[in-house]
Amino acid sequence: MSENHQAVLTELNACIVACNECFDACLNEEHVGHMTNCIRLDRDCADICNLLSQAIARNSPNVPVLAQACVEICRACAKECATHDHDHCQKCAAACEACAKACESLV
Image 1 (cartoon, rainbow, N blue to C red):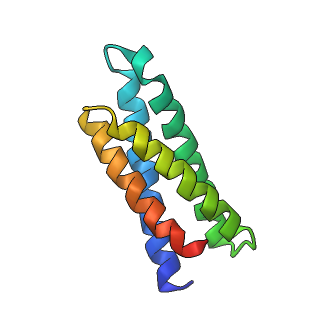
Image 2 (cartoon, one colour):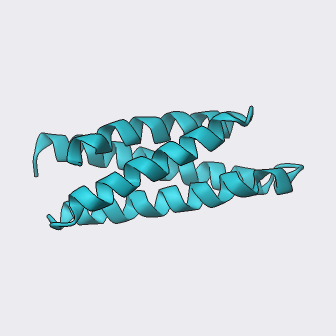
C-alpha cells in the first residue's frame, strides 16, 4: 500500500470517529430536532468513509468513484456541522474537511 493510501486511511479513520462522536452527541442535545440533518449526514459520512477505507484495503477498482462520493459527502457534512456551535460539531466539521482534502488525491 502506498504512503498516500496510508495517509488517506488515517484521515478516513479520524473522520469516522469524529462523525460517530458527533452523531452520538447530537442525539443528546436538548433540541435534538434541530440536529436531524446533522445526525443524518454524520451517519452517511461515517458509512462512506468506512466503505472507502475497505475498498482501499482490498485495492478495489472502484476507489476513484467511492473517493469522489466521499469528498462530496464529507463536504456536505462539514458544511452542516459548521453551522452548529457545539464543540463536537466543530470538531466533526474539521475532520470532514481534512478527509475530503485527502480523498481528492484518489479521484
